[in-house]
Amino acid sequence: MKRTLLEIFCALAALVLMVSFHNQISRLEEQTQDVAVLRLRLDQAMKTADSKTEINDLKQQLLQQMEVRLKSLEGALQQASVGSGLAKTLQTEMDAAQREVGRIRQEMVSDSARTKALVDAYIDEVRTTEKDAALKLSETQNALTNLAGQVLQDSNQLTRSMLLPTVQLNGDDTVGSGTLVFSGRNPKNDQVESYVLTSFHVVRNILADTPKAQADGFEVTIYLPGEKVTLKGRMIANSTKIDAALVKLDGNREFPHVANIFPRSCDRPIKVWDAVCAVGCPLGNDPVPSHGEVSSLVNELNGSNYWMINAPTYFGNSGGGVYLASTRQLIGVFSKIYTHGKGNPVVVPHMGLCTPICSIYDWLHEEGLDHLLQSNPVARVEMDNLAAPPK
Image (cartoon, rainbow, N blue to C red):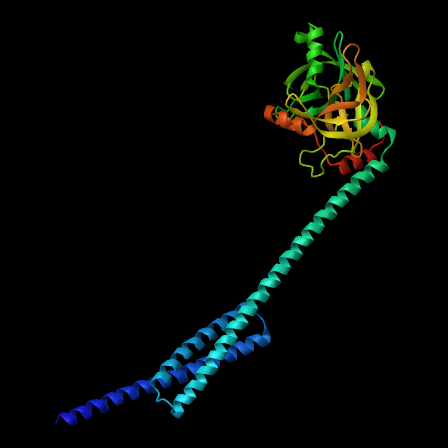
């Protein structure tokens, strides 16, 4: 009886094992069909090559299916009789599946590397294109600026852009220079106003030797073609640190000739050897130009930095404008001149210091007055002047 029950249990166990093994074989056949379908879809996608994303997705699905099939083959192989024909077949299929999984993984790694290389190459190409475009733009701007400076170097244009914006500041015993930087409707109050940029020490000396100037203002001479206009001016802002002052003119007359200021946002930096023109009223003369270059960009004095120019200057040039010769844009305010010796100091006219326009911008921004600095593109100014008849 016990033997019979044992045989029955063994038979049932064998039957269960056979059913389980049969189910595994059935799953393997289904997986084989799924893999075949995925391979067909992948082959079709590779031929059309419409979407790399679709191809990568199909490869990922195929890899997952192959890994599942590989595990099923391992399970079936463990249950198959060692050395049997089925075991050999399963081992062969498992080896093939392993090779297929390895090949798909290698393809995906290669695809990823190729994609990365393509992306890197595209990024490098874009960066190179951007650099080339920026370089060409800069070269074009410089060429236009130089062309404008070369083509329109006539005396009328030079006079309008640099001499006529120059003014003279007068006291009883002091004379200095300044530059008209704004004349028109002030956007903050909608009133017609005019402003002159000069050196603080010029206004300080005038106020010191001309007592009535404190209350009545001091004389400012405006130069127009064929005439001079004298108005009163009053200092409304100053900076002793950078030796700069802003003077507001009395009255509401609008003057036509205002300096074009070097733009704060300009990506063309001022450099040593840049040609400049210094304009002022030395020794009380009417505006006089002199030419030279930027000699140095670093000259610290009393905690502030000044630029040195070698354009000849003299007493009375203080407060006058320093212009970039190629564009005739105001780049600084003449401040100081070197002297040599103590008893009878000798003026060194080719060693003058000017307050850089960048420092002027910073100071007037703090004062809420930087909107008074008028800066226009050189090309537009040149075209306007070219179209207009000389005044």
